[in-house]
Image (cartoon, rainbow, N blue to C red; front, side):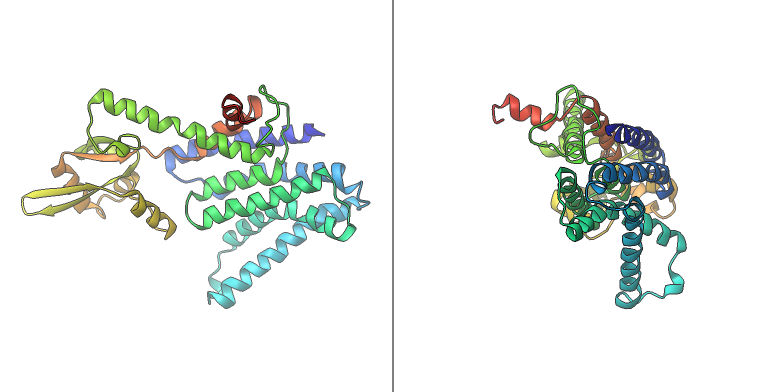
Length: 330
């Protein structure tokens, strides 16, 4: 039955390619981008769970198929009630488009949830229902990361789609099934993180060759660009500037400050902001010109490492498990 997951993987891979393109060009991925992948992968994983769990638990296929939609509606209602009665938002102000997107997001979580509900009421548990539980927990974990603003909405959506619709390895990868990260979405996540680490190494080598000077840790995360041309570059600012008379004082942003801003929901200052709203950032642009150079972090959209991690996991295997094998741990 893994053929179903292979088709889902193809739909998700195509969507990830397009989402990566949008994130690079526009720094945003509209939610509608994900709908085709959700429709295809969502339908196929429901069939997959029914064939491998539902029919053995004695559940009618119609009941099994419709429960995720019912759970999603219930979660949407609770979400709406919290927004209206707890947060005191006027219901007439709620955007129907946002409500539709919220329902689809809850639907993803409802897929593994429905298997858990049937497991509770039928008492039937097998290998696949256990993986549904792992998928559910991992989706919650991913959502918490998003709520804390530790990554973008597109990154969160991509990983939740993968976690809820492809809980198993669709094919045997080149390196074989990993012994540690046996859960496909977890392997994708770890591979994405590890592949993303190649960027700091590349930046450090670039800065050394160009003889750029900065505190060591910033050599790994950024590089200087001419202040007058900052709108021609892509990334976010990692320096603070202050004009003191004829002098311009500058200092690098602390990691703790950057993380604090993200957790509090504040955006980093991207060069794209300057391109889109030059009049709003006139003071900053003047300071950058006077400073001569500005250090920026390239800020690779994490959707790109997710795409790379997804393809690497599908075809080759799990990097983390390989490293553990090389170290003799497993």
